[in-house]
Length: 297
Ligand SMILES: Nc1nc2c(ncn2[C@@H]2O[C@H](COP(=O)(O)OP(=O)(O)OP(=O)(O)O)[C@@H](O)[C@H]2O)c(=O)[nH]1
Ligand SMILES: [Mg+2]
Ligand SMILES: [Zn+2]
Image (tube, rainbow, N blue to C red; front, side, top):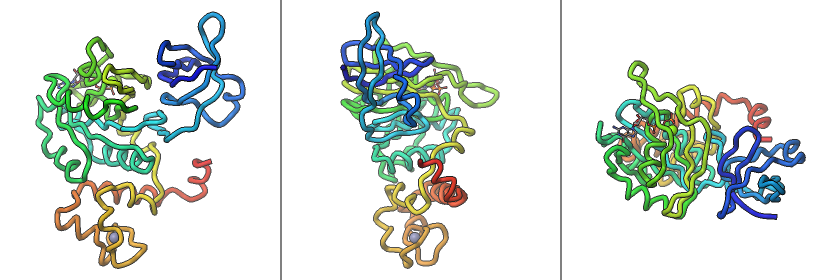
């Protein structure tokens, strides 16, 4: 039996990169019946078969898993954003970053298209919140070296709204890459969902980087949610204030004596970050416990 990592899942095949070759594997019957669906990023055992294909035998334990994008074992989530069209809603970044934080995955914020719009406001929010943040341009190459350094040796996934330049950045990172990119629609100010599947690529800096389909605003509402009680820990910059609220069970939404709210007022926590927290908190509150249980099974 050999070991490898799933780099692509397409039309019933899982493409497993063993380091030397990529073998197209079919899942054995037992996986099709088991509840666990193989994901890109899964470390697996497989049996090479005569003819060059393989059979997927076993999925090794996961470090973490994400639903959107559908990937596993990610060390670093690279959230690509833009202050030029298609403008990124900070709520999208905050939502993805909260999920990453709760799954033990680092987040890097890349504000792309700086050649069109410097993106300083967006970058400042995330710098202040304590995220590594790079202002960059896939077009001019600004920030590409810094990004390469940040991902070296890591398994990372690029995510963000459609048209922000995820595939373009990967093309700029690696000589010889020619991933499809798509013009942004002038009329709608949105991307065209050019990337259609998740795929993990080996870069010469030693990173494994997944390109993923961009989000639409419709997807954002279907993404996974943290439990409302745990959400406070998913906002990293809230940490110093959490034990300073007047009430131990403070929700940090509009409570009296809330240290988080005081920090927002004092400009120590970015206002949009707290707004996203409240929005996620209200959404999480609206999910009935029985439904959450069903989803967690
Ligand atoms: N001016 C400028 N244009 C860029 C930059 N990065 C990407 N673009 C352009 O933005 C458009 C969308 O880029 P893509 O790389 O396809 O975006 P994506 O995030 O992969 O989009 P999806 O695959 O749909 O999720 C293309 O026309 C790119 O040429 C940049 O830094 N500056
Ligand atoms: Mg793309
Ligand atoms: Zn509070």
